[in-house]
Length: 307
Image (cartoon, rainbow, N blue to C red; front, top):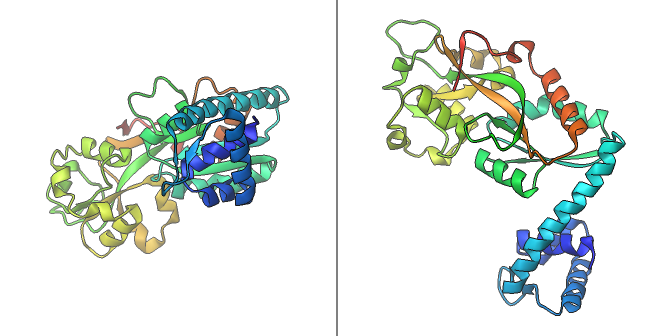
């Protein structure tokens, strides 16, 4: 039994397809199938039921795969111990990141980070907060960039920056001021992300929109960028994160409105499992991200309120 064979059965379990699993593992399908068959012969047990479509693990296969995940996790720890001791930023680092952060933060730091540490294989996947927390506990990812919420006490947390929430769209107010008060939004057509996005949850709580779910309409068909296009056409308002403003043209920036004081802000942090030992790598990532964001976003201001 080898670690490579364990990697193969885990890949098939995840993709439920031998060809896709082989592509993910960067081997040919015959090679992957032969290695798995050799493992089954060694164990004298079938790990997968190949008669099912998609392919599925057998009863004993599920137990073998679960144990295999633990074995791979422990093997990764051994490699990490050596790399940390040598202060080497090499190997693989798997990073989860919220969809409301990824498109605006990743372009700011990822290329420079990869150039500084060319021997490090950085793999990024977009996930919601609950998925990131689960993946950190199982070892599926090594770090997660999230907005700080309650219930994160079990993780190591490092603050990256503070990001304001902004209103985007054409405001129709009796008093044409630039700032927005929560009262200005009570009768507005609001485009909100689907439930489960902390970005949505934080804003509905701050704006005291108790009936947000009743007015959601077809919002589940959209994304933040889709909602921005709707708002640009005069069809309601949406909320955007501060970093997104730096990607807008001047015409679009005219549709950005800050909240009245206290302004809602989210704390963006890097979460990791307390058992994760590659602290030098985490420190390098934190440093690169903080370098990439505006200086004004690195401290919480008296005019801001964490939500």
